[in-house]
Image (tube, rainbow, N blue to C red; front, side):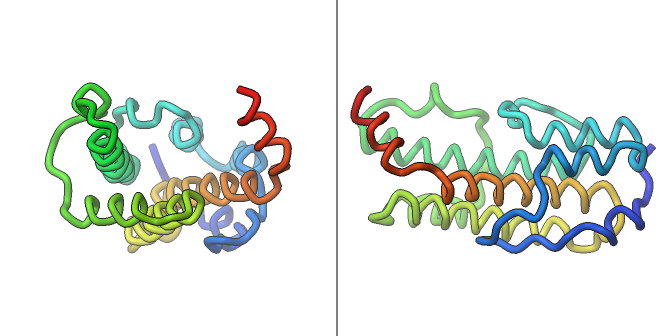
Amino acid sequence: MSGYYIYLISSLPMLHFGLKPPISFERFIRLCQGLLSEEDIEILKVCAQQNIHDYKTGQPTLNKWRVFDTALRNELVKIRAGRKKVEALKYLRQDGYTEPYISHLALNAHRNPSILEGEKSLDLERWRFLEELSTGHYFDIDFLIVYVLKLLILEKWEKIRTADKKQCLQDLLRG
Protein backbone atom coordinates (compact mmCIF):
# COMPACT_ATOMS: atom_id res chain seq x y z
CA MET A 1 0.00 0.00 0.00
CA SER A 2 1.34 3.40 -0.96
CA GLY A 3 2.04 5.86 1.80
CA TYR A 4 3.41 9.27 2.38
CA TYR A 5 7.14 9.79 2.04
CA ILE A 6 7.63 13.11 3.82
CA TYR A 7 11.30 12.65 4.74
CA LEU A 8 12.40 11.40 1.33
CA ILE A 9 10.51 14.01 -0.68
CA SER A 10 11.52 16.93 1.52
CA SER A 11 15.18 15.95 1.11
CA LEU A 12 15.12 15.71 -2.70
CA PRO A 13 16.86 18.42 -4.74
CA MET A 14 14.64 20.65 -6.88
CA LEU A 15 14.44 19.97 -10.61
CA HIS A 16 14.44 22.79 -13.15
CA PHE A 17 13.91 22.33 -16.88
CA GLY A 18 17.05 23.06 -18.84
CA LEU A 19 19.46 22.52 -15.96
CA LYS A 20 21.75 19.61 -15.21
CA PRO A 21 20.03 16.83 -13.25
CA PRO A 22 21.16 17.00 -9.61
CA ILE A 23 21.08 13.19 -9.25
CA SER A 24 20.87 10.27 -11.63
CA PHE A 25 17.86 8.02 -11.93
CA GLU A 26 19.91 5.09 -10.62
CA ARG A 27 21.02 7.06 -7.56
CA PHE A 28 17.45 8.17 -6.96
CA ILE A 29 16.25 4.56 -6.95
CA ARG A 30 19.04 3.66 -4.50
CA LEU A 31 17.88 6.51 -2.24
CA CYS A 32 14.37 5.06 -2.30
CA GLN A 33 15.49 1.59 -1.19
CA GLY A 34 14.28 0.97 2.34
CA LEU A 35 12.14 4.13 2.35
CA LEU A 36 9.48 3.10 -0.16
CA SER A 37 7.45 -0.05 -0.48
CA GLU A 38 8.68 -2.51 -3.12
CA GLU A 39 5.45 -1.92 -5.04
CA ASP A 40 6.15 1.83 -5.24
CA ILE A 41 9.78 1.28 -6.24
CA GLU A 42 8.60 -0.97 -9.08
CA ILE A 43 6.20 1.75 -10.25
CA LEU A 44 9.09 4.24 -10.31
CA LYS A 45 11.27 1.79 -12.26
CA VAL A 46 8.51 1.38 -14.85
CA CYS A 47 8.82 5.12 -15.61
CA ALA A 48 12.29 4.54 -17.09
CA GLN A 49 11.32 1.60 -19.29
CA GLN A 50 11.24 2.04 -23.04
CA ASN A 51 7.86 0.30 -23.25
CA ILE A 52 6.13 2.49 -20.65
CA HIS A 53 3.38 3.11 -23.22
CA ASP A 54 2.48 -0.57 -23.14
CA TYR A 55 2.39 -0.70 -19.35
CA LYS A 56 -1.16 -0.67 -18.02
CA THR A 57 -1.53 0.05 -14.34
CA GLY A 58 -4.08 1.20 -11.83
CA GLN A 59 -1.79 4.07 -10.84
CA PRO A 60 -3.72 7.19 -11.98
CA THR A 61 -0.80 9.60 -12.37
CA LEU A 62 1.24 7.15 -14.42
CA ASN A 63 -1.82 6.39 -16.56
CA LYS A 64 -2.48 10.09 -17.20
CA TRP A 65 1.15 10.56 -18.20
CA ARG A 66 1.06 7.54 -20.49
CA VAL A 67 -2.12 8.75 -22.20
CA PHE A 68 -0.73 12.28 -22.70
CA ASP A 69 2.67 11.18 -23.99
CA THR A 70 1.15 8.52 -26.25
CA ALA A 71 -1.26 11.08 -27.72
CA LEU A 72 1.62 13.48 -28.36
CA ARG A 73 3.68 10.77 -30.02
CA ASN A 74 0.69 9.68 -32.10
CA GLU A 75 0.21 13.24 -33.35
CA LEU A 76 3.87 13.35 -34.39
CA VAL A 77 3.41 10.03 -36.21
CA LYS A 78 0.41 11.44 -38.09
CA ILE A 79 2.34 14.54 -39.14
CA ARG A 80 5.41 12.60 -40.26
CA ALA A 81 3.36 9.94 -42.04
CA GLY A 82 1.43 12.63 -43.90
CA ARG A 83 4.66 14.22 -45.01
CA LYS A 84 6.01 10.89 -46.26
CA LYS A 85 2.65 9.95 -47.76
CA VAL A 86 2.37 6.67 -45.86
CA GLU A 87 -0.47 5.28 -43.78
CA ALA A 88 -0.04 6.33 -40.14
CA LEU A 89 -2.52 3.84 -38.69
CA LYS A 90 -0.07 0.96 -38.42
CA TYR A 91 2.37 3.13 -36.42
CA LEU A 92 -0.10 4.50 -33.88
CA ARG A 93 0.05 3.07 -30.35
CA GLN A 94 -3.64 3.45 -29.54
CA ASP A 95 -6.63 5.16 -30.98
CA GLY A 96 -8.89 7.50 -29.16
CA TYR A 97 -9.67 11.11 -28.61
CA THR A 98 -6.79 13.55 -28.54
CA GLU A 99 -7.12 17.00 -27.07
CA PRO A 100 -6.83 19.57 -29.87
CA TYR A 101 -4.00 21.40 -28.14
CA ILE A 102 -1.82 18.27 -28.42
CA SER A 103 -2.11 18.44 -32.21
CA HIS A 104 -0.93 22.05 -32.08
CA LEU A 105 2.03 21.15 -29.86
CA ALA A 106 3.14 18.46 -32.29
CA LEU A 107 2.64 20.66 -35.34
CA ASN A 108 4.57 23.58 -33.81
CA ALA A 109 7.47 21.32 -32.87
CA HIS A 110 7.48 19.73 -36.32
CA ARG A 111 7.54 23.14 -38.02
CA ASN A 112 10.53 24.32 -36.01
CA PRO A 113 13.51 24.61 -38.37
CA SER A 114 15.80 23.20 -35.68
CA ILE A 115 15.12 19.56 -34.86
CA LEU A 116 16.77 20.03 -31.48
CA GLU A 117 14.69 23.08 -30.62
CA GLY A 118 11.55 21.27 -31.75
CA GLU A 119 12.36 18.39 -29.44
CA LYS A 120 13.10 20.81 -26.63
CA SER A 121 9.70 22.45 -27.10
CA LEU A 122 8.04 19.02 -26.85
CA ASP A 123 9.92 18.23 -23.65
CA LEU A 124 9.01 21.61 -22.22
CA GLU A 125 5.34 20.80 -22.84
CA ARG A 126 5.83 17.40 -21.26
CA TRP A 127 7.38 19.18 -18.26
CA ARG A 128 4.40 21.52 -18.03
CA PHE A 129 2.00 18.60 -18.15
CA LEU A 130 3.94 16.93 -15.35
CA GLU A 131 3.67 20.15 -13.32
CA GLU A 132 -0.10 19.96 -13.72
CA LEU A 133 -0.10 16.31 -12.66
CA SER A 134 1.79 17.13 -9.49
CA THR A 135 -0.78 19.68 -8.31
CA GLY A 136 -2.10 18.59 -4.93
CA HIS A 137 0.51 15.84 -4.53
CA TYR A 138 3.20 16.78 -2.06
CA PHE A 139 4.46 13.69 -0.23
CA ASP A 140 2.98 10.71 -2.03
CA ILE A 141 3.88 8.29 -4.81
CA ASP A 142 2.29 10.60 -7.38
CA PHE A 143 4.83 13.28 -6.52
CA LEU A 144 7.65 10.73 -6.89
CA ILE A 145 6.36 9.54 -10.27
CA VAL A 146 6.35 13.12 -11.55
CA TYR A 147 9.80 13.65 -10.05
CA VAL A 148 11.19 10.56 -11.81
CA LEU A 149 9.67 11.52 -15.17
CA LYS A 150 11.15 15.02 -14.88
CA LEU A 151 14.50 13.56 -13.85
CA LEU A 152 14.47 11.36 -16.95
CA ILE A 153 13.80 14.41 -19.15
CA LEU A 154 16.76 16.20 -17.56
CA GLU A 155 18.99 13.16 -18.05
CA LYS A 156 18.03 13.01 -21.73
CA TRP A 157 19.07 16.63 -22.23
CA GLU A 158 22.27 16.16 -20.26
CA LYS A 159 23.23 13.32 -22.63
CA ILE A 160 22.50 15.59 -25.58
CA ARG A 161 24.46 18.47 -24.06
CA THR A 162 27.54 16.36 -23.27
CA ALA A 163 27.53 14.25 -26.45
CA ASP A 164 30.56 14.35 -28.70
CA LYS A 165 28.94 16.15 -31.62
CA LYS A 166 31.77 15.45 -34.06
CA GLN A 167 31.67 11.72 -33.29
CA CYS A 168 27.87 11.65 -33.66
CA LEU A 169 28.11 13.34 -37.06
CA GLN A 170 30.84 10.94 -38.20
CA ASP A 171 28.77 7.94 -37.05
CA LEU A 172 25.73 9.33 -38.87
CA LEU A 173 27.67 9.93 -42.09
CA ARG A 174 29.21 6.44 -41.97
CA GLY A 175 26.05 4.61 -41.87
